[in-house]
Image (tube, rainbow, N blue to C red):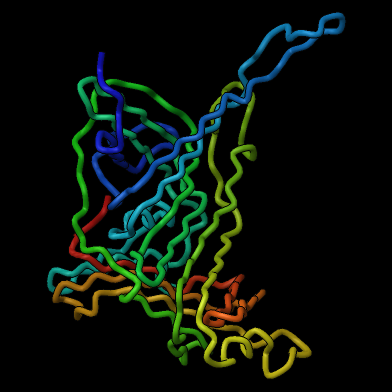
Length: 327
């Protein structure tokens, strides 16, 4: 009898598919993963008959699989999986992996699917291989006293269970922390640092619905289709001035029309020059608005305010490290 599996026994590997839901060899990682949470559903259908209180039969419905993946963001590989592209440019051993660059590398309408293997490596191996995968949503967050983290929701179309684990690989790029981060807002081209920021989260959502492309003849997804891209940002800061509140209002009082669009930049980097070992995550959004804000005031504590930024367009997303290419 083999022992119980623990987190120490588990690692994940990835590979990009040439044909949707046709599994490929998984040999690549996406950086430091701290947790994986698969949620599988047969969507059973109850068949009932008049004259009987009990079920006559259970029939399997469509197969659905959702995987939550959480980790520390020390690789841009997860963005290549989501956006379906990466231009890799070298500067003396540092590689800038660009996933979106408005006007040069536009946001794609669709990305290739990928295969993910969940390897349980112990006395007896178990490997769960998910094929026909796409990232439905991805959140990147950083806070005071914490690291730059990510949380992804992956939709999968099929699952195969085998018994020979692959070879673990792990990107060793340095981790970035809250003190490495800078949030800037303002008019496009004139963004200024937001002081006393406590935390920031940037969320990308693809609005994929597996039910869109279910079809008779198979229990599995026939495709996973990206729809409208939603990008939102939430950040909390100590209240020291009314700058962001006035952006929300469109002035010192509610604007009679739509307030001026706000550009927003999140740069998290190690402060090293490009070509000398730079590590950086960078995202720039434009055309967005502050949708809501709230403030917390108490008798004994710092006044804090939270802003929710919505409907931003992606101008740039890139990651810098010493890895030549991810896939």
